Image 1: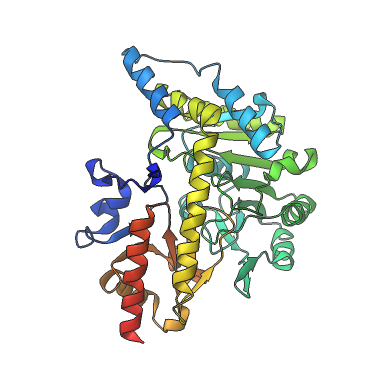
Image 2 (image 1 turned 135 degrees about the vertical axis):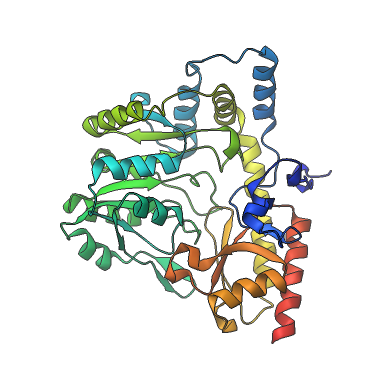
Length: 391
């Protein structure tokens, strides 16, 4: 039987960012598009059915949030991740980046510091720069092909009076770590000791591989939840980034009230009928589809692992979660710009440059593997051929 995830869908039939000249450049339209972090797979059928039903209604006036949405979300969190969330602690937001920016703007002041753990999602840097916050860098430690947190460095940074917040990436983009309960608790204890608020981007939480369970930071216990703002969205899990919004979980009453006031001030608290329909269906009925996707992604990880094993000067950081892979090209001896040029012109790859995630990412590249096996196999063969030519 043909796997529906093997279907090669032409993303260029719509203005998808992954294949758009805005991302690929005018000279890159023929490249393997593996930069933008979305999937090439059709959304779950229950989502498509719900969207069609809403479309067939044919009246698109202002709408309240459907009664079914919050129970669908809290039910998903409880059954999938053993996290019981009080629905009254959840706020809506347009997207997670919006939540990160608002958190920085209302819980820190200009010139105060926010800790990040590079190499990390590049939008963290942009948000802090645009809001005139000081970036405090707590680089992750890479040893024997695996990243860990530098807790001594974190303790030192957190003890600085200027440090008011940390942006946690859980699971971590781009390195694919799924932080353990012990790691998260240690980070949380350090931050609590020094009154550093934990703002956790958990958009990739549903996408983990066997043996690695996602732990929502706020699920560690009431004390951790009181010092946390958790950012959630079904965008990655169900490939509905263009038709969904996000959720912000805040247990602390004062912080939640402040956030609600700011949402109202900025008028970012409106509902989109299609987003509501898509998210309700995804959280209510999307589990089997996601399970199939996770199995498919695990197969794609194996494809990359097997191919990279034949290339002595390229190393793969084994992912524990996300559909993003972190590849180490440093042994090729290329500068960051030379590596980008090599991947584009010789391998035909359009991936995200490692230096976008901080100086710690120089010599690396982030590869999106949420595509068909056929497309990924062809791209890996192109990379092998290109590297063979220069060795």
